[in-house]
Length: 330
Image 1 (cartoon, rainbow, N blue to C red):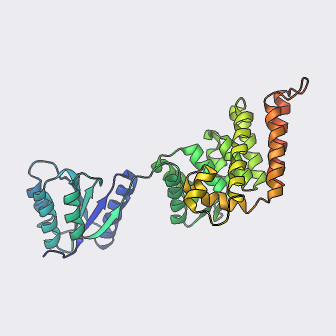
Image 2: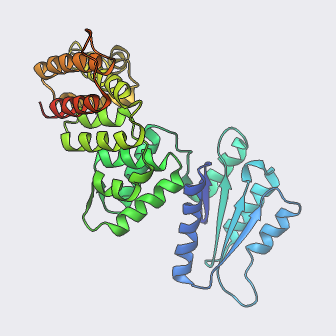
Image 3: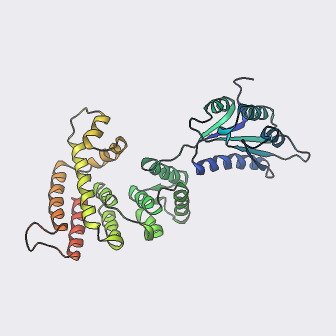
């Protein structure tokens, strides 16, 4: 009947492979809680004779037992295949569950609409994009593990592991299993993944802007051991850029819209939340002091303003450490 939801049919939409796998596994696990002998039967919606195979896979066997029928590539199927899926779901016994996988997007949109109307459950698995999407994914993984993670720890984790969601999920799982405290700290992440971290000036600047002096110093010293050649100029540039963004946010006219403020501060809109949180930790006097420190530091990293002021590499490292500690704690 048109408009009737088939509780036995789950529609999984999207191309993020890890999330798709989890959605399918969730259906299989629920079925196996009821019947541990439940089979998983995988079909391809584009293969020849698929309509008959759907009917066969969803039919009860002579020996009984449950089944989860997973049908992939639905976006590339024709209307007869979708009709067969809907019909099989409507007639399926309590022991049979059907999972239809659609990659999303414009392809097969009409078929997706029909399946959406029929499915009793829909799971969206939209591709996770770099940047904010990866950060949100890590936060969700940590929350699912019933843990919390400091922003610095998350930054180090992403820097070490990269943007592969499967690797990030595995890393969070490892940390949650091995670390006893509820809060996963930056030192915990560094202990497990510090050997692969390529610390950036941005990460150091982020710790400074959050007024986390010990964490900023730890990141700085870790960077000194990985790529000290580019450390000074890159860190000063990142610190300077971060301070400029804070100044722009802190001095913006009252009542400015979020969109206009993002343009004014020259940042993407999603970053305003972070900048607003950081700005509350800085007074105008602090920001003025930071500008002075960074001006002197920039000159020191580039060789000094006057003859005889050139610093040796060790002196540059000490000056950088001193400046980072002063900025973060001022």
